[in-house]
Length: 361
Image 1: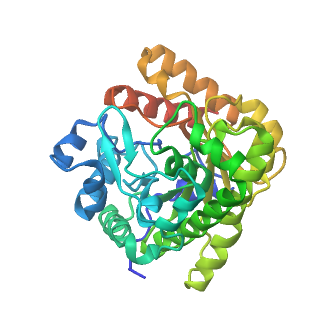
Image 2: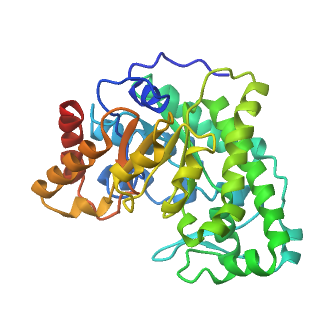
């Protein structure tokens, strides 16, 4: 494993492990990206995936918010995408303006499984991702921890079957309801690839990990319990064992973000994750009641759209959020990602208010 500088700010890791902290740490989903003018300068003419796959570009973009909001953000998250697992499985994906990621040949029938690699060697095929992580961790020089991440199996199945984002989820639902056996085969294969990818990110230098189940809210409770939760649990169960096989004894905190699955919070707290990230559909006080005395750190959950509001509104929303969550076993974040249209000065004001109220309560 590479050698890295000692960590100067370990607030996030301590909070994630349930240790007492002087204030709740802060990072933001999609904190590196299009809302920052310097992102466009560095990305230049590269398309999105080219930027992710170039270690120098990806590392620079990853660190941009840490520099831009100097002293206000307690973590960096590697600039990458949840669709790297499908890419490793053999899918061709293009980033289309106005549409986002579009798969050239999505899966529409179980027979289509024969044309993808259900057992990809992610250590080899995603080598560029590990190079970007190692370079970023080196450049950070211990300023803040570096997070890695992966898309969860159900969310990746949605993209692999729909071919792009969806409002109806026709093909994803067809898979789980008409072809459930094939759906589980795909979910299991994807899950194994996710586990290995997460493990190799840690080998490369990631110090904390997040699993993004972005389309969780498209499943009702029973279907979530069949097609999402077992695989989320499998990741949390198998990953520490795999890390030990790779010679990593340190505790690597693991966060799950199941957007929209408000009904699943109790189950998620019993699924082996250190942190559960919440979207803005949750009331923090109610979430705390569900967690009870379990040693779970909650993350979230401000609606990112609040950044379109006045400073007074942001101030009020931040104070309410932190007061309700409390400052222990808590990581401040949005309930989803930043928007390309947001003003960096609004984000900066938000971060400053987080520091202010994080120290007050």
